[in-house]
Amino acid sequence: MFWNGRSKLKVGKRLAFLLPDMRGGGAERVALRLIEDFLAAGHDVDLVLMEARGELLPLVPPTVRIVDLRALRIRSVIKPLRRYFRERKPHAMQISMWPLTVAGIIAHRLARSKARVVLSDHIVLTKQYGHFGRAGLQLMRASLRHFYPLADARILVSHQAADDLSKLSGIARDRIEVIYNPVGKPPANLAPDTAIEALWGAETGRIITVGTLKEQKNHALLIRSFARLLQRRPAKLMILGEGPLRPELDKLATEMGVAEHVILPGFSTDPWPYFASADLFALSSDYEGYPLVLIEAMRSGLPIVSTDCESGPREILRDGQYGMLVEVGSAEAMTDALERGLDARLNPATQRARAEEISGQDTSDRYLQLMLGSS
Image: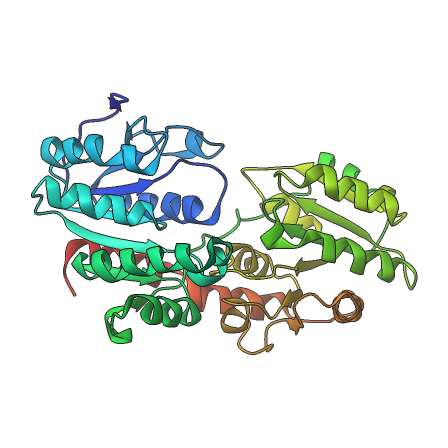
C-alpha cells in the first residue's frame, strides 16, 4: 500500500472514498465533485484506490491524500484496506460499485473499525450483471443480502435502481437512500473553442453524445439513426469518449456511408466546451443508472433526446418534460426524435434550472450528512 505523501492537514473529520481507480466514468466524476465539496466544508479527504491510475487522477485536488492499495483483484483489496482502516482511522468511508462494496465491508469488519460505511451503486445491478447467468446472479444476491445490511447507509442514484437493489437484497426500500448525482456548472462565459469548431466544420445540425464506447451505450444505434437522418437534412454527429468498441463504430460509420459526418475525438477531461459547441444532445443507452451526461447537457442548455431506458432518463427528464424519450433500440424512433430535437426551440434557462433542482448543492450536502451520521 502506497501513500502519496500529500497534505497531512487534519481539519474537521477524515472522510474517505474507495473506488477501483480514476478512469473517466460517472462514479469517479461524482467522487471528484463530492471531494471538492467536502474539502470546502473543512474536512480532510482520503481517496483510496485499488490502483492509482486513470484519466481523472490529475484532477484530484492536491490536498487529498491518495492511497494506492495496489490490488489487481477485488479479493486483493481486503488485506491492505484493513490496514488502512487501522492506521488512518477515518470517520467514514464511501465505497462505490459492487462487488468492491462487499470487499470494503469485509475489510471494515476485520479491522474492527468504528468508521461509518456508506455504500453507493450507480447502476441497475440486474441490468449491469445480467450476463452472469443464474448462478452468478444468485451469488450476487447472496452477497447483497449478507453484507449490505451491515452498512450505515446505502445510496442509489435513481428510484428504479433502488427498487432493484431492494428486490435483490431483501433490504426494505425505506432503508435505501436515493440521491441524484451532484453535477457542477460549466465555467462562466465559456468561449468558443477553435479546435472544437474545426472538428465540426461548417455543417449545421450538431448532435453530440458523451460516454465510454461500450455495448451499454449502444452508439451503434445512434450511428444508424444518424445515417437515416442524413437522408432528410444536413447534420454532424460527435461521439465524445473512448473505449473498446471504437474500431467497430469506425467500421459501422464507414459501412453506413456517414464516416465523414461522424466525429470520434476520444476522451476529454473537460466536456463543457464540447457541449457548448453543439445544438442537440442524444443518449442511446440500453440501460443506465443515473447518466451524468444528461445533467451536463441540461446544464449547457441543450435540447435532449434519450432512450427511455432503465434507469434515470425518465426521472431526470420528468417523463419527457425536459427532453424527448424514445423506445430503447429503435433507430426509427431515434431518427424522428433527432430531427424534432434539432428544430426544437426551448429556453436554455429552463433546462439549467431543472439540472440545478435535481443535481445541485443539496445533493452534495445529503451525501455529507450520511457520511457524518448527522441525519
